[in-house]
Image 1: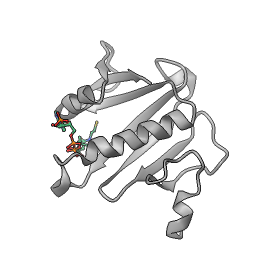
Image 2 (image 1 turned 90 degrees about the vertical axis):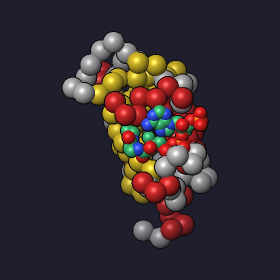
Image 3 (image 1 turned 180 degrees about the horizontal axis):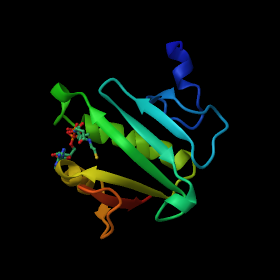
Length: 128
Ligand SMILES: CC(C)(COP(=O)(O)OP(=O)(O)OC[C@H]1O[C@@H](n2cnc3c(N)ncnc32)[C@H](O)[C@@H]1OP(=O)(O)O)[C@@H](O)C(=O)NCCC(=O)NCCS
């Protein structure tokens, strides 16, 4: 894929590269891999039947390169992912957080649910 082609999604924020995922035609169940120079995320526009709320955007992973953590890049990448989510019609965000990352998600505005979907992970949501 040419670098210029990675941007060819009208719904992707300008500086968020889309490495994999549908082009203009997408729907519930669509999956993308997006990133910037510091990290990447795997995300899904969930099927309503799989989500706690309708129109939920699910973050499967978000990872910043290890030596670059703690410098604000996680927040910056997350905010681009949130803009992406709004652009594809999401009204809610949902994640299953590693225990060590719960504090990060709280800072991003998420709250914990009292439901467990994956053992050893904390389900969290945010309304957009
Ligand atoms: C979690 C992760 C994406 C955060 O990225 P980062 O670049 O280190 O985070 P930032 O520097 O942008 O931090 C933003 C804020 O969150 C806080 N924060 C970051 N990681 C945190 C953590 N693990 N626990 C508590 N707070 C955290 C920061 O202190 C900062 O707070 P501030 O704005 O009050 O200063 C990164 O540490 C990472 O890739 N971790 C390994 C993979 C992982 O756990 N991903 C999440 C899976 S659910």
